[in-house]
Amino acid sequence: MVRGVDGCPAGWIAVTIAAGGRLMPNVTIARNFAELAMGVEKIAVDMPIGLPGRAGPGGRGPEAAVRRLLGRRRSSVFSVPSRAAVFAADYGEACRMALATSDPPRKISKQAFFLFPKIREIDMLLRDGPAMRDVVFETHPEVAFWHANGEAPLQYPKSKPEGLRERRDLLERQGFPPAFLDAPVGRGAKRDDFLDACVNALVARRLLAGTARPFPDPPGRDGHGLPVAIWA
Image (cartoon, rainbow, N blue to C red; front, side):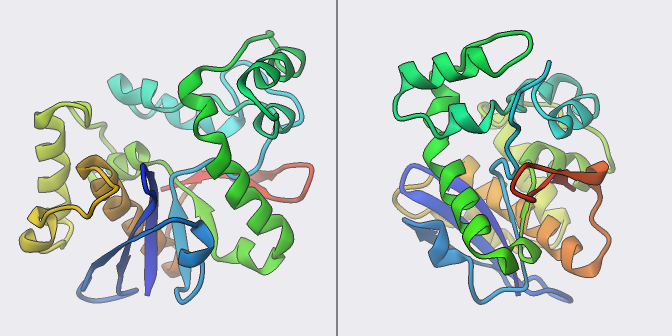
């Protein structure tokens, strides 16, 4: 089995599928990422892995590499700030650290700041358990949908009903059962979180098969040896 994971208001939403043949999907909502990190061969998660000491223009190499693929969807890829900013105690300190460790200097958005606890959660898991680096990989749903759509960006953003329908129909064409895609999403997650976890699971399947593609290729490494790449 392999697993696609996305952040959600309750913590994390995970869609687990068979590594080959029929998908046979199931969905889980968990408070902690560690609850989802065992029992599968590969995990593809929509969360940055590998943090820079200094943030350059446009963030890390992976962000710059995938934005050019996504057309109008490129704004969905946010620039990852430095490790010092991500591990700051509060928003004010995070902005100060981001200004001091970015070129050109820039603060961070509140939206990005609210992701920092989840980024730290995965970062510490992979630093404390090096074996997990062969299991947990970074992806981005818009890049995963780009791949599933014949390497073409989607027409609508997921914030619009047309975008949700576009993603749902594409997932059905990829083998997800309609009844699974149309079932109510559990409490603590939104429908777009669920659809993102579904497409991330397809990336996890390709990771296990050895056919997933990293951006950049080859992946980089951060100061702790964590891989730095978005996989599709």
